[in-house]
Length: 485
Image (tube, rainbow, N blue to C red; front, side, top):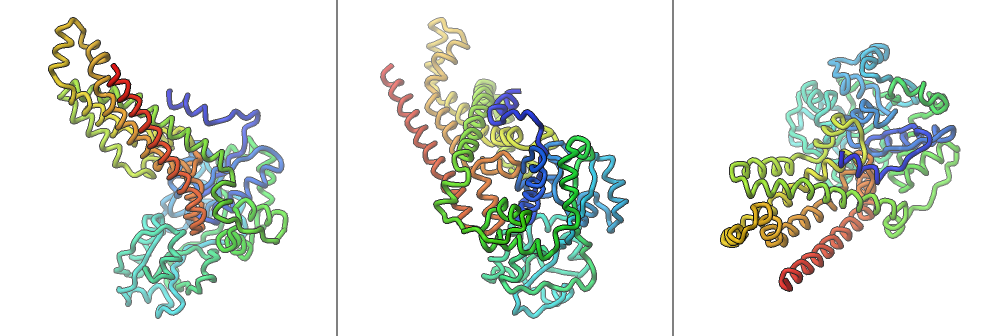
């Protein structure tokens, strides 16, 4: 309940519910999400929850009702979401999705399939050639590595013995150009295929299914948003493969914002906009709003972590038989990968955005607070505790008036550690639409744009330094009060 109440601070009430459009964390999905959002916004309120991580996260958001629609591909729906062993018909997919409250509609007009690509000077032309060259180093996106229609099935079909390494899709092209890897997975509409002069390997055993771009939506959307849905339906068949390649190029090669690329396509305006520099990317593009979101996430996460962690630390210190269990639980929470935790929290909490982000950040903040509270209390000399009881203080009074004040510097150091860690960890909030400087980092990764990465990383680093300085001032104040008393 406390998390829900705090989350209300970050959200604003809307008189009319907006259509919520989601997108994954790669260029094309960002752009398509913007096209859907801007199209719907012409007839009613709409918002774009962009860059929601991989298929598992964005699908969880759709099923929970946190978003209403997002662009997807038939092959992904068929093999990855519905877990069909072989491609099925569109009618079969619709029948399987209906019990989940989902539907598929509005084919956008192009197909964007998976493929593997190598440098133009490589001595391979077909996927089957890879089997004869086990020395070829393969770098694949993390999602492709785990997909049912990704590497596992591809390796079986072609008898590939290579052990690929995981690479973020945004940096894979650069890794290939620098010869750190020899082959990568690509999307057939990627603009960088031409830029880097790559050769797309022929799928000579027809492993990959078709990946026609469609919309995956909640079945109640046409009734809840009839005008917006009617406007979106007009997009059917309007985006050609060349259009999509050009839009991807405008974002990835020309550095145009996703919203501007979508707006230009919708208005048939092909004039390029000027590319922003690092200074503009850092302090423009909603800097104050992102800073507010990031700071509030950190403050609330540390506050909630302290509310939960300090009492747990006290229990660990005062009840020896529970000590190891409490510290172990806090330690385990610290080791859970952030994206895995978010993927679990979305269906559990039934939403994306602030609430699951706060729960995750609070979990990561617990360990230093619990551990330092326990350590600080255990370091209080037993003689002082005995003296306090001998003077007539109750056990509770001794804890509150003697032991906790003496342990306060150590407890405060744990809260400081949690706060500084939370500044960096809060960037994961962008993966589930909670904002903060992580939005720029995820965009920079998608575009392989170093300036955009720095535009998110530099403010986060400065905020961490300011947080560190603020806690050091607090520690000095506590120490001065302690010595004056």
